[in-house]
Length: 475
Image (tube, rainbow, N blue to C red; front, side):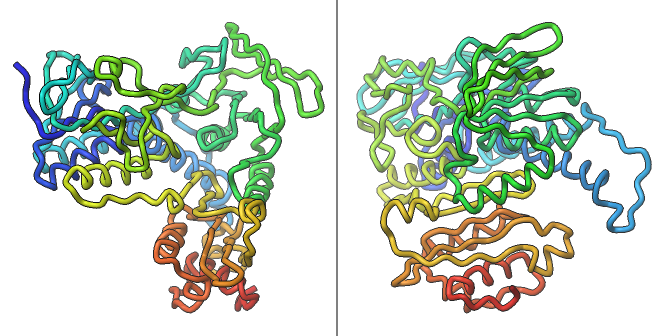
């Protein structure tokens, strides 16, 4: 017999679990379905982000950063370290523990907010009077009926044609986060967020890392000045990035992987590595959703087609996160999840895609929000730019991390902030000030006039805002 709910959410990643919690807060009877499982077969809520994405990658980045600091920089502080070794299984174990804490935290939040959780794969069965029937295929099959349904099934890694993931020699983000030893030679295809973060982890631990990127420019979506500064830092660290590459045949052998590739000048090259991480993007995950059973419209990429408010072609069916248009970012999915729950309640949920921040958690970190200088030039927008280097910031000097800069872009006439771009220490935290400022349509003068604590990295935000008017005080 079917169990009835006001709302059924399919998927418990950042978009799904947040939508479920917000809807429950608004008084709805909510069910959430998710099939992720841990090593013991139990539920592992949080989707790609918590299990094989945002959370575990940051845990490994922190561990590898600690290792590199101990090996290369502790001496500058008068800290003498003897023989330094990395215990990869212990590092992976810590990562797994961090993941479990987040899995369990979401289960606790479901109980706290009275969200009914069902462990298994959710799929449409049919439309019924006043809603939709959804099957949960798991240890115990269930039939649920909901007046409203939110599809939040996320995305999956895109494989190279002819080189499927085996998670041993050819790795997706899943395999890259579970390696039990440091490879001597590691190859990556794709220099996006995943490629750079995973390359940074294993480079710090001693791997010889080579990144093959098809695009002729490094981080083409990033402000060019920021991308160039980041590239110089990565080059100095020994992270080898080849641009304008055309990847050919990939062969897996007993000892490793061989990649034939053509360089930007047309020269034939070959890369021999122990393992290869492929990070060439992700595809919406709608396999097994049984969308055709209810006539849910999908796009050519398998994405769920939605309007600006995340409504599908079906009444009462919504979709959020990686499975729809827009950036595949966990925080974007969360904002959509909240907005949809509020729209179902008759409120006016809101998401501004122009104010979604981007972060790459390398060292130096890269973060930005709003438009880049190249975008403003292409659009013919008159603007002013101001930059401030971390080398002139007292807190950065004390930290021993002065790489990079902060860059403000403001309208030439109104001085409204149009974009903020950062490469340097804790850029992921600093960018929040820019998001708040831009949400309230602040000017660079507003930030320049606000008192920032001293000494702090945040002073670099103030100084870059001052630089828009060519009046920095410390550079």
